Length: 324
Image (cartoon, rainbow, N blue to C red; front, side, top):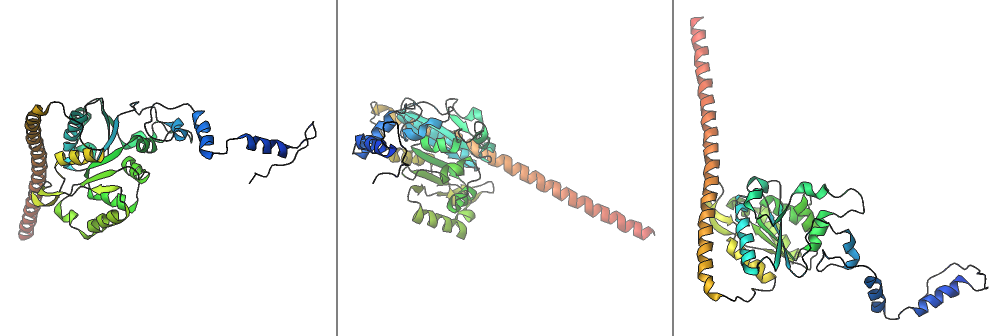
């Protein structure tokens, strides 16, 4: 049906309605052809790989221009397993090469305690909560969490704390990472690798959150944790983050599988390098745990000293009473 167009008498005694009708009749009857004409009139944006051109005009200039590559968005939350993220990055670069994959990393505020800029290859863009507001000043400016969502082919959160797991399940979005997940295009996958102490993992609230996500968020895959020594107290139980090699494997499978390998003879050397990195990483993790344990013991000793001083003061008071 034709739209209602206000009638206005023109100089040649025809009406605007007739003009509008003739314009509509001259347009292609095939709606898809009309859409192609509209889209083709908008200049393409080199920063975007697979999003609609109609939405690409506000793309954040800080995002890399890298069409034709896999876009992997990694994220880490406040767990000691955050130190594994550098191994995941290195392995993905090894599998695909930097010519075929681009990786960006989101760190929550808590994750920054376990990772510094020097730990990550300088080619990796690291995003923090404060970056959300560095470019957004008005309604027409790009919104970082939207642009990251549009840029990414996959999101991998490793490690995922109990806190962020709860936020995702409840739909909360109070930082950059949870905003990305809340605005996620559900046609693209998200991998979550939980990492928490066994009591937190086995708690009713965690089980409820995992069940809800499994039933209502099919685009999200939970990477089942393993049984290991978890946390700085040396507890052994289910809740440790899945082995980082398997996280890489799951990521590659989601992206379509492994590329063809030209030099199969190098596999053994690669495995040896992975083992060396694992050992080095475990040493770093042990060092962090030892440091935390030392700090805790020091605090306990100080508390005991304070208690002893309090007892001495009480004895002095008793002596004073005897003198009286």
